[in-house]
Image (tube, rainbow, N blue to C red; front, side, top):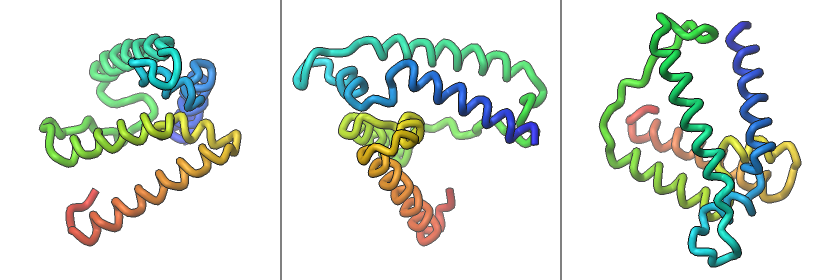
Length: 145
């Protein structure tokens, strides 16, 4: 139960941060990614959001590495993958293309889904379909997740 409550609180905090920073507005995200100003003026404000996210993540990881186990995740294991491989690069490219085209990435899209805008609903539906397709292909190919 502690893990569930912790996840809920962290999710609410993360979602509030996304709303306050404007990351749930595809126009802000597209304006940030459009460095050349093709579709309008460049919006560098989200650089502060990204920078703050890196600093907070670094600090929390530094703290977490000192603990024997995370406070609210008794079954947590640190990732063991260390190589940059083809699936990682392909996934990163697809993620970046989707982010640039739609103005959403998974977290902000789920927060924006609360507004029930057609764009957010379509993005989350496509994201879910892509996830199911990946799982199906992994099962067929025997590669697992």
